[in-house]
Image (cartoon, rainbow, N blue to C red; front, side):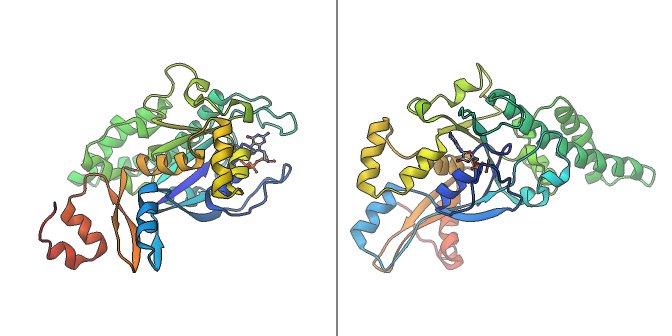
Length: 316
Ligand code: GDP
């Protein structure tokens, strides 16, 4: 599973990415990155860790999430400011929005206003989708003369009656509830505003204790647009990640936190995509397998080997 980290420039994306994936990309204050960084993070899971301690296996394989750090989105950005092709490939987006104050780090809009910034970024995603959808509608319109297949007629109706009006009303497509057949029709377009989106609010160090992400956006804004909001302080997370386990616990307790916010980011990414894990254990390997929520036990067996699915005997 791949999650693309997006947001305006200088909001803490790379700091967060480095911490999530224990990498060391430059977060220089004046340097605006143009390259895409990719790295893999393990999904923290205390249940799996207990199993590892119990079995002391030769191999330990937690579930993983791949994070892709995408250079900052610019307002009114042309396609060049965004690596659209790379962004289209990801399964979900994590939008990092700045709520921390720091006069030394210039905000591209001149002030810190997370409620405004989430809309700027959403609008860029919507505009990119609008371009693709309009082009496709024009194509289908031209083809009307030769006659559209039943499938094309359905697609045209979906695009003109549902998708286009939603985008024109500046609503992200992820807020729509579509039937499976329509979901499948859209899938090929890899529309950005249709991707599940996790909002990561990067707050100042003194704001971190409370889970204030939702209130920062203003009343009633969270809802269907932002079903998952995680509050983090990127520099604090970075500090925590350099501590050993014992000092981590102390440091977190001082801050009044039960676990690093990053664990919540990774788990929220998992939830957002409707993913769950099941485990296999033994002295050779303790391992987490990733599945869509709602998968039946027999199909789950197939994730390991098709023989297990075919020869499935019983689940207790
Ligand atoms: P990106 O452009 O979104 O990838 O942002 P970076 O992660 O490179 O961060 C830009 C600058 O902001 C760096 O100098 C970071 O150290 C700094 N920064 C990131 N998060 C915070 C924060 O929560 N508080 C403060 N004061 N600085 C931060």
